[in-house]
Amino acid sequence: MQKMMIVEDDPKIAEHLQSYIEKYGYHVFKVTDFDHVIDHFNEYAPDLVLLDINLPSYDGYYWCRQIRKASICPVIFISARTGEMDQVMALENGGDDFITKPFHPEIVMAKIRSQLRRAYGEYAVQAQERVLEKEGLKLFPERMELSFNKKLVSLSKKETDIIESLMERYPRVAGREDLLEKLWDDHVYVDENTLNVNITRVRKKFQELGIKDAVETVRGAGYRLIVSWTGAEER
View 1: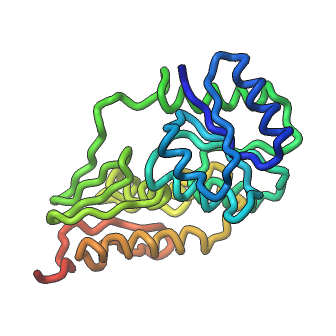
View 2: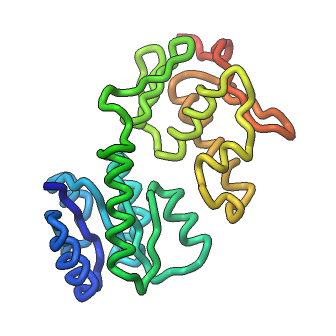
């Protein structure tokens, strides 16, 4: 039986979601201690998380980032916030989908089933782990990890997606529009600087591995991965 975790501080909404989802045969865990969401996540190991944004102590964006450090299970944000940037922030922080309140429970169920199919069902990636490798650089997309010369760094979901695109396009340029489309489906609403910020974070990850100048900016086009590692730090 697949397991759902609900992180919603409105008890009526949480109970409504729980009772409705359980009717379809899923096991549901409802979080009530909002200071230890990640502890509950690690203990319960859900297959999918329904996550509100406005929560006590830390918001849903924070908890989604913590979840992404441990898992790539689907996370669906449910929030009364309807602004376009709220939806962008949810996706940037590791979310897979966004539902606005008030919602129809059938819409929630349809999105749950869709995410479960993508992650575990007919549309899921094959069980064998994917590894992308270029000149000793190895990316583990499912683990969100990057390794080089016996060093390993953890990545965020966005960093993983960017590096994966750069490696797949090598030696060609990964266009800015292509990256925006891969990272944010609704990229028309994404500020131009958002991609620049994420590229800067990716460069820092390469630097943690001892690799300098790994991502070249191609003016007017996008970014290109440099795999000669001539900029690798001396050891």
